[in-house]
Length: 237
Length: 186
Image (cartoon, rainbow over all chains, first blue to last red; front, side):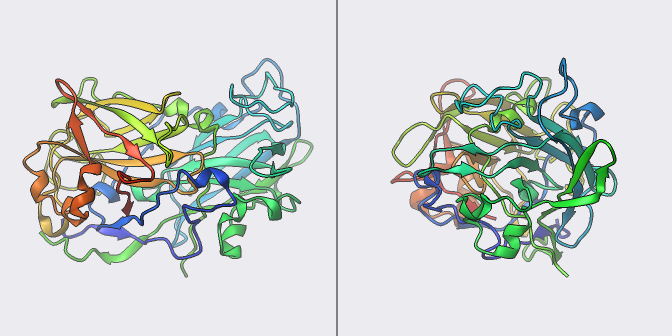
């Protein structure tokens, strides 16, 4: 037990607060009391690993598997999952979901008056390779209205969910597109105080990731919590 | 140089599109140890049920061992038990899962922790997921658990599931108010 190495706690400003009143759904759902600080134990520094999960290569291509290709602009989204020490996170599960090119989710609760595309379900997953690299082929999602405030529109975004090597490296985030005029107006994107941290959620257009005669490419690197340098105090047996 | 962690964002109302393919509400099938079911509701600050939440659970097996390379103790793994569950709430904010009662695992200073599930909570409106733990009412180890002891005594009951029939426990998550669940700063 003396060799447990904990994970760094998030720095101020780099992660959103739970209560962010401009995002109305946070008001009744953010805890009112501060979280109780406890040490990290074996329970937290371990977590589910998906290195042996059978994920088919086709699951990372959201344009395949239906009767016809989906409508919209085909794009490539690729990048690396890294920890805070710039080390790749290999063999970790990446789950992704998004709306279609018209801004509608393939979900019964989405009542937006935009066409449903029967050939686009908007879910994909991949497991990173030994260098932490992942790659998806998908459709550029559309913007959509969301009634949070007057004339509220979500910028185009793709939801990403990652586990990393422990339960403490769990991360769900959203990837945005560079130059989107809705970004300065979006309460969810702007819930992060630190503008440098906020920009980590914006993908970069990349000619290297672009495939000629096929699709534009975007690079989205994702950083999960890294480990402390030394074993945790008080863990000696 | 240390890289900043990518900011967290809410899972939003359509989380089921992304999470459902990995739903695992039963981790007990074929596993060794006493089966327990845990069910309850997730409630917001107005006492309204939250229909679009997802609970993820991570736990040790019946012998107290985590299926992870960082658990290097000489305690047996159960090949039929991975320790991970993911359950959504339904239209009434209810969830239900079936698993194995975990064994005790060591905590700070090698002191044994009482059997517990580690819970990670997602929902629309939560900009970052929340962590908490569930303990089992009546377990004699609860009183000596070094982590539970750090929770203010008056709020400790929010992390303890109550008996609800044979092998069954009930545990609600409350986001705000007098019985607000204790969430953990890890």
